[in-house]
Length: 146
Image 1 (cartoon, rainbow, N blue to C red):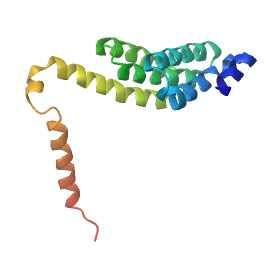
Image 2: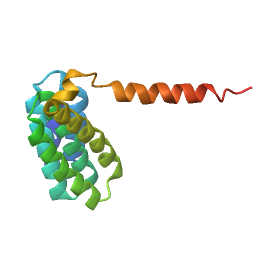
Image 3: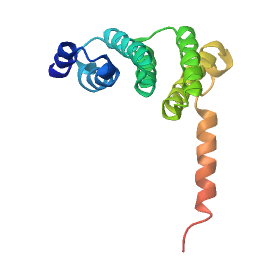
């Protein structure tokens, strides 16, 4: 891939987090194993933090966590990593990455709670969400535009 070879030839570490995020997320994600992509994104995070490209370093971290989630990494390990990176996102004021990470954190926590709570396993996992959504739809019907 031209972008990767150019990056290597020019020894341009400052651009590595940006190139890795785009190449490994958008292009190679369907061609290479997810665990290898996850490792490349982690490397993109490390280089970004070393070179001062905090925004793309933390984008690599966020995408690394999402890749690991898809690879089936243990939820307890994943939630620990998410919390560490969320703390960095707060510290460096990276709200976009943090908001995406919060969504992943909520998903992981819901799965952890579902797997631990046997009462939820016996019932409908999405029942409360469906009830809230239906209630919202019913309330909106009352205020139709004329």
